[in-house]
Amino acid sequence: MPNEQLPTQHSDAVPPGWQVLPIEPLPRPTYFPAGLAMGVAFLFWGLITTWVVLLVGVALFIASLAGWITEIRHGYKSH
Image (cartoon, rainbow, N blue to C red; front, side, top):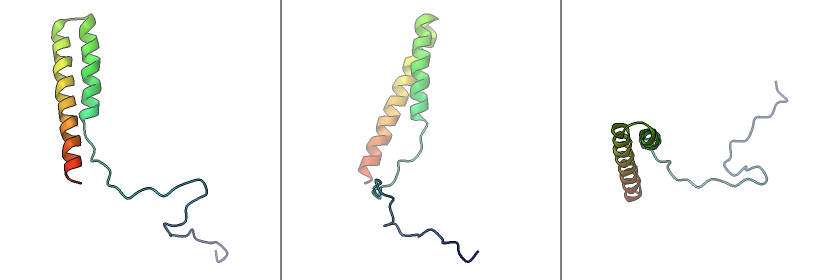
């Protein structure tokens, strides 16, 4: 239709009350947060069941936390 106006493609056009986001790259996706949550679940499940599940939860928690911290540190070094 000739009377329709296309939205402007300008990055300066920001609705009132909004602000422009800074141009920063997002961190890449990782499985460490999910592993950390699963480690906590196994840890608490192990508290009420058996020590083997508790040890698996502790190991998963420590490994995921260490991996996530390492990932964050390498992300800061690359910027």
